[in-house]
Length: 579
Image (cartoon, rainbow, N blue to C red):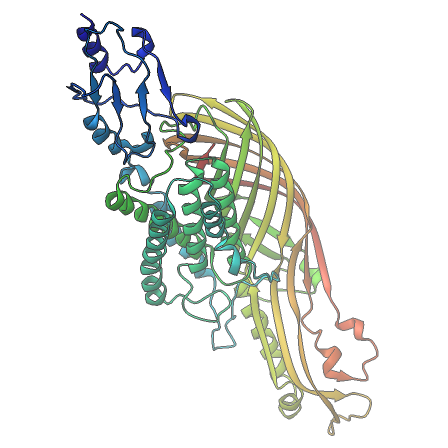
């Protein structure tokens, strides 16, 4: 009867010997890891021992070797024979799920987010049609998107998430992979990224915004940054805390923004670079799953179910198109500008559809209410700005043709007008309240109420003139007297806006795609009241080109200021990391 009881206990894998009045002692148990049991098909075997002692045998190759020996028999009567239990088959199955960590699958590592980001970058390339870099014909404007931003942190920030991941791994902070598996997957990620970026970069031959080289598309710095961020996300964001993912993708996004502000890349280059970086890393980790299976795995994902709806805290990267206020009209009489053909003295500027990129995040106290913020860059092309520069160039040419050609040839040896930027770019930072309404286990509606600051980058037409200065005091009509050479650069025409408060709201629909990942479509509305000022100074170079000029202020700057309510709608989509 007692042997039957033992058989039943062994077959059901209930290692509770106390239930049958058995006492178990474990030596050095504090030095070993916690046992993690899994439901397995067991084939226990019973062998009669040579001594009067029961043994519980554990494979010494297991990660947590234990030697358990019973100190007394299940039955103290001498006629009962104890038995030893050989669990070799149990150990053989148990190593297939080492430490209870199930192997990742190829598709488990794929979100395919990189593909729509890359496509969005290709679509956004159309913005460059508003720009013509370094045109040789001076009668056409040489258009470049320039900013005064000059910071080279992006040369280092592209690798910051990788440095953090490597440091944590070497410091013994357990992540997804052992060091060997991590190095293999990270190396393959960068190899795949380089194999995609370089052929496109040197095949597309896109001119950079600063006109330096023809290898702009896609952005290698941004691709590298998003490989680094996605590695950090895989190793620690998915296994320990989403804040690692937020930090990594935040640094990667900042790297991309700095590439644009440094005038090294277009927005489209950055979007496609980010897509390639994410796609390459996910593909590399998927290949690693196939090759390594469960070898070198340390931790499982934090959650295997979609929680973006019930746990709506998020960090997102977004892109959209901006619509809204369509024009600005300045008083041409104040500026001293007139159109001879239409007899219209006003200067009217029309806005085109804006390209909008941004990063946004919010922390929710529960599934309904949270607080957060948004950083956004909106670039609005101004229709006719380049044409205005061309018209001004023709006006100067006609004016010079009315003067003495011998004098003009020496006095104004060259005159050039170039459009430094024909986009009004707005940088905005907002903070406020976020609301979330779950509709199902995968869909949720959201809204927000934000307040922030709006900063405008100027529209700018620059001019460059050079020649020999004319001495008015000593010159006669037939005998001009020349002074020193001059070389003058100045702002020919600018449009600037003041920095103001802005207010925003919006509606969004979130779809929980995978664990901690979601897609979002949104319609945002922003309002701000701004003062726009146009300054016009076509003859400022006379201050250097004329010697002995007493009233230099007559060749100064004319200006016109308007007040305008700016209403902006942004339609777009976003990729979100939830936490």
